[in-house]
Image 1 (cartoon, one colour):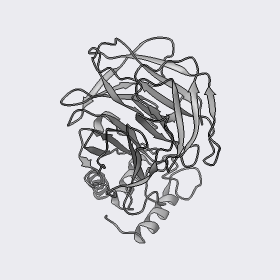
Image 2 (cartoon, one colour):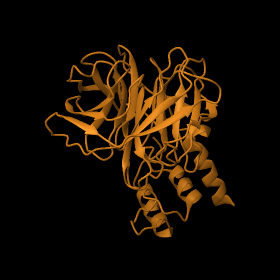
Image 3 (cartoon, one colour):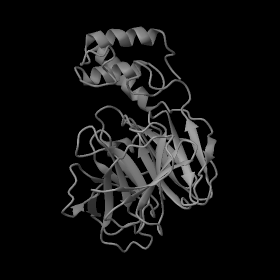
Image 4 (cartoon, one colour):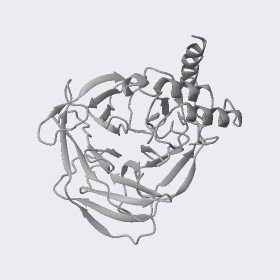
Length: 345
């Protein structure tokens, strides 16, 4: 009884700890004049040091691969699709196990008149961070057609849950932005009605992302951004009822895009306009340490709580001794690393 009580209280305390990020610094400027209205950004997990960016309305159906300093690596045309008002991009799993996909949200609707919106899904290609820029064609793109349950809406935030593979869209032009879900699997032949799940504590959301581990969510406005901690087994929409933690942004011309980096240890932002700076905000303290199960930068009681709450559990983060399952052997590793680590930030 006492041990269970400690674990429950530790989990509650974890939700009250706000991660700390640097004030942000420019990693470089976008080097291509073709990227003149950057509206979405996503960090590749497959290709080291590669970011995906696309323009807002008025461009063709294409995405750009750039390195972490903003230098152009390639232009990737999506064959057989259109670009009415692309607003955000996400990356994550899809129908084929082990394959990452690009999810591009044609979800902009300034006047709120379109009966449907579309999310395009394409298998992520291989990109070398040292390659010479060239133009490529991505074929086999899927179209996922969605409609809102409560009428047309303008939206600029698209997120892909790496845990469930659900698609999330967050509306923009309301005092409290509304969160909608398209549960996995996603039809590419029928129209899917989104589910309204909750609302944010503020409005005019223009971009968002979910960390690769699925444990932290970030949503930004033009001048504000917040992150929420997501406990193991928690529905994404329940996260927004918990404590929000304000995180820094730089003053940008028209900043709309945000994404976590490939290991979830920081986030990037970019603005519309030519040769805009690519800002990076690093997580303070250590990140992705052995034993840091919830990946909040410290090893503490919350990691014991997460471990106990899911045990026995086959999970990469909890399998600390790499024997294929989380069990008492991993608990021993966790205890040893905890004793050698700062308990609280």
